Image (spheres, one colour):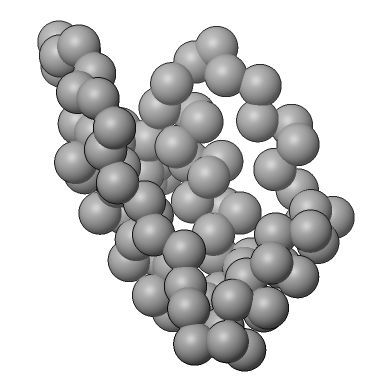
Length: 88
C-alpha cells in the first residue's frame, strides 16, 4: 500500500481545530512554523490568497519578538462558527 503525503489542511475543517492548531504553534514562538501553519490553514480554505505568507514576512516575527519581550503572546480564538463542510 502506497503512502500519501501528510496534508494538515485535510484535518483543519472545524474552527475550534484551526484555533487549537495555531495556538499550539504560537506557544512555541517558532515564527517559521507559524508561517507554515498559516499556509496549511489557507490550503484548507480555498480559494484563499495566502501568497503573502512567506518567510519574508518579517513583520510578524518582529511583532512576536516584541510581545515575547514584554511577557505576552498572541492567541487565536473562534469569533464565529463556520458552516459545517461535509467531509469527502
